Length: 542
Image 1: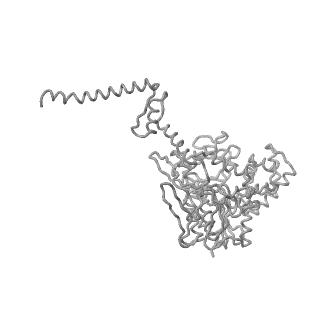
Image 2: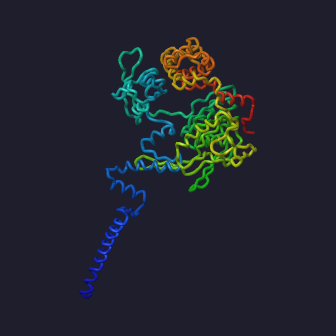
């Protein structure tokens, strides 16, 4: 190789590199002078990452990149639909507890009375019961911090009492007849959460089951409840899903399976990237020999609608009440290493006749979406079935020829309007101020020793009548800025007295007291009882 060629070999790459760098500077100078000093981001990865990096590097103030990402992800998901969401690690744990069927805590049921946490009941065999904490005790101190008389939100107190299984929390208890605070060291343990409020025989041969959500334990709770009722002569079942916002799909499918013959379609899902997936019934079922009526309202959503839709579309039972919420989007949860998660909508739920459960929505505008229930109310949909406009394109037909309706939610076979009989301004005033509930709590607390001697709901009602409970409530309401109105009180008397007795019964006998006590003014439930008693279309397996 000649010296000339050697020099050329060495310097040519250097000259090219210098030219390229000069070109970049010239180009940047030219662009900046011609484009008002605009800075252009050239994609190396994706635009979102580039923007995030640019902000954190160049913004006028210091920016926490992690915090910026945490705030950005929810905004992106909001533009998709009302149910896709991002859950930080802490929120994910709290949101999952009711569906997992348990949490770690001290094992008490409580409420706030005069800014103080009062224990209504200790959970059987729970940590608090085992060390001698009693109903009526007041928790004033938690781990050295005073929690009474400070207007502390009940959620904040709960957070102090909850904690990992096996950890200790020290509470200071005020107990009547004891001068000083009593301190207990409580070792937290797993506390069961039940999704079945009650299962009892409401009439001979007719049982009532109320589910409040669909958790991992719901199927077992439900089938155990049915078996217990069968021992008492169960032939007809009323399944109450009012206010049940849903939960896991699996228990809803498994409960539907208990009513259906083998091979029946229960529900199917389908999405842009997800092919149709069907869920069908299997052989046998503890409910196949039962007549069934399902009660829905505007608070029934998701898994509740899947179960009701399967019963309705397979001509297996009668749905009564009001049109359900209309939540038919399938979310898939993906975890991040920090314990947070994204729940992304990947498909829609469809009933066996092909109805999409999901009600219409525009992108992710959650405020309009959830306020749609208020719109329904204002349009009279809770009062008049005729206010619901049926569209021929939304009509579907079941195997036995019954017409069912799509358009979002499950339309009942029999519409039951909101009952307004006996509703007066006096009743509305005491309800709005929470006075019925507050009085019931205070009254129960004052008469706890007497109530401990009572064994049945009838005994409790007799005690309340003899003690003039209703008159005491009217005086209590007057002291709380709702003066007595004799004519309106007479008109609302049945509702007022029944609700008072029901809430006091809950404080005394838990849900086993509340639901039988509230039954006389639950007109939808009474209609279901009448339908089954009259031998109306339940319907039973042929």
